[in-house]
Amino acid sequence: MSQAAANMRQGHIEVRNFALSYETIDGAVEAVTDTQIHVEPGEFVSIIGPSGCGKSTLLNAVAGFLEPTSGVVTVDGNAVTGPSAERGMVFQQYSLFPWKTVRENVEFGLKMRGMPKFERARAARTLLGLAGLEAFENHYPERLSGGMKQRVGIVRALATGPKVLLLDEPFGALDAQTRIIMQQILTNMWQRLKISVLFVTHDIDEAIFLSDRVYCMTARPGSIKAEIKIPLERPRQQAMMMSSEFLALRRGLMSLIREESLKAMGGEITDLGMQGLSIELQGHSIADLL
Ligand SMILES: Nc1ncnc2c1ncn2[C@@H]1O[C@H](COP(=O)(O)OP(=O)(O)OP(=O)(O)O)[C@@H](O)[C@H]1O
Image (cartoon, rainbow, N blue to C red; front, side):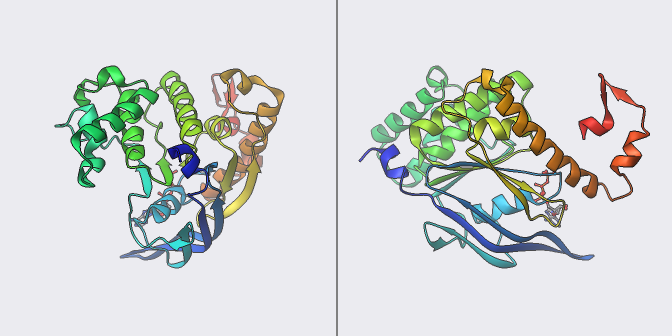
């Protein structure tokens, strides 16, 4: 069976009755509460919400880096109790080994698993090819652009054949143009590999463009405010972002996030208060930009 065919049936993430509080010297900080989400095998799901609502907390719990205060996280029915190679993770900050070449970085997890040299070089090259990085296999990370480094990060997370790929704002540090290209590369790779993806982002367009479904979270303590299906056909093309269907989804998500962002800012800022503000930024009011 091909890797893609095998992945089609695996990678079912289930988060049930989930809550997570951080213990601090000032007491418990309730980050996420009463949350249920799921990702079906091969599905691309994004989590979006106002700053500090608990997106990373939820993702880190699925990765096994954090333990829920209550509730349960399972992948294919098995409770997540710690990090595992079956769950690949990509962070916003590039986490490549600077002393290793691009191919050595990608091969690292395979080497740890004892895969023979020739086999792991072949696996790394195949994935690097999918990400358009074949020509850079012998380069060191310092010679790569931000977009390239992040592509290597994604390829490295995929190299060990995880059931699910978890990405935390992976394109947040990239310029707008590179970001769009990266989104296209990620969807292409995802369509080829048919892996389940849980993707955290601040960017509404990015969430719509990439996803089958989007969960929108409330202000902290975060819980799921809405679940939005994205019925745009695949493969997704950049031109779709101008379609009336895309723009309607965008408007809906924007108003959900805006409501929660205002709450997150403490309640003293209200929509009504915003109307009195006359500061304009490139033709938009602050209220529009929130
Ligand atoms: N280690 C920690 N100790 C205490 N509080 C924490 C810790 N990590 C996160 N928090 C708090 O938990 C809440 C959720 O944080 P989290 O990083 O999950 O949110 P987020 O939605 O990913 O934020 P952002 O969009 O700004 O990245 C925030 O209020 C944050 O300050």
